[in-house]
Length: 326
Ligand code: PBG
Image (cartoon, rainbow, N blue to C red):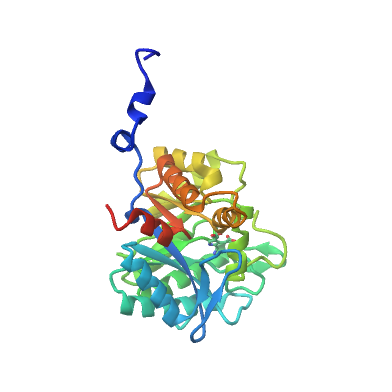
């Protein structure tokens, strides 16, 4: 196919031609909205680096979940910020923990909305690491039991799906085992299987008050330089019983999304993280980028790379843009 016999511009000459040959379609079905739960009453504390997002107490998180549902967004993912933190992150698996109460309240008022919970210890530990520590070492195996307890407490509170984001080895199998033993064999696990040690989580750590108090997360989250290792990580989680695989972050890791999509026969989700969102918001504020166009381009690109669904702070805006469709 060579010019002048073939002219690719023929099929780009107007929007209807473009629609007809469009390969990737963003749908409201693809979107998952992250929400931040806090204790208290009437709390709606804006997160400065994530415009439009707030730490929400129970009645407000229910309102936000309802707003997502009314926009036809199928699912939300809940993060918790407890009042008190301790060395073992006990708030993560407390029966009346902040996430557990938020989940109950949402399922009570918006029962059809899928409520996913982030399973991790970092928001609940006073040292800010995702596992328990010995000296300055984050210990793997002793952490697994606590993560499984957190997942079980979420399921008991009514969570439709649990999403472990800690990056400890073996946690998917441990969580699957404990859920099954307790008759939650129908609760799927959405595993943050390829989660990189990324500086793009900065705004989230402010939002969730979960920055590590010493060191960093390089001994458990993946090195951004690695791609084959992502396949090993993902394959392990598949073997251990994951139902959905998450790649995180999204924009700098489109190659990983694409590779995972090719190699793994499970639904793939991508997490457009807080720093990706904040960059677009900041550029819009400075008048340097068109927020809406960049939002849609970024989401379509994540889908084009192979993601079946996207966790994104733009979920509500994108749903409004798409307009109830598909
Ligand atoms: C850990 C967790 C993090 C994010 C989701 N789950 C932060 C981290 O690993 O430090 C980041 C999400 C984002 O940046 O939007 N519980």
